[in-house]
Length: 99
Image (cartoon, rainbow, N blue to C red):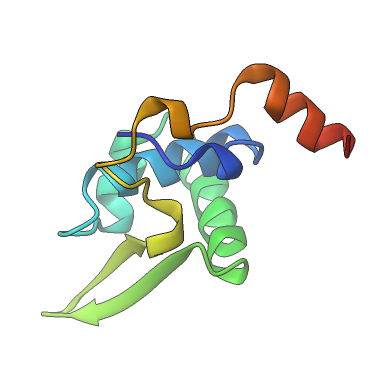
């Protein structure tokens, strides 16, 4: 599953991290698991995680001696929503242009 369309206009590494986190939303992921899931070096992964945390799109929790990272609920698409609820290409362009 991918992150909601409204969060897909971010840098590629951030989108890849959000997608990986959405796939494992209930259990979360460690930094090492995210690094393995995303094709980027550790510095880019850490920068992207910092940006996502600053924008409150992820949650970081300390548990059983490991940090686990979870997507914020607003990033996770509703599994019951139909594909018609997602904006089309033209609608996405209109929103970006402010039309």
